[in-house]
Image (cartoon, rainbow, N blue to C red):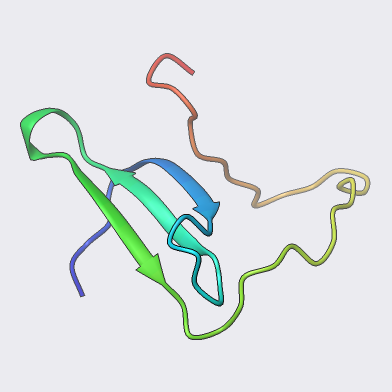
Length: 68
C-alpha cells in the first residue's frame, strides 16, 4: 500500500453515492501532492463523542492548516 504521509486534510463523505462513505484525503505538498479516495469494506460511522476525562495523556492531533 502506498504511504499516505503526510496527510494535510481528510473528509468523510459519500460523493459517489455508494453504499458506504469514502475517505477523501489530501496528501503531500506542492507538485508531489495527491488526492486519495479510500473505500472501505465496512460502513464508516461516528459512534460517540465525549469529553476527555481528567488529565489525558498520549493524545495527538493533526494540524488543519500549515500555520496551525
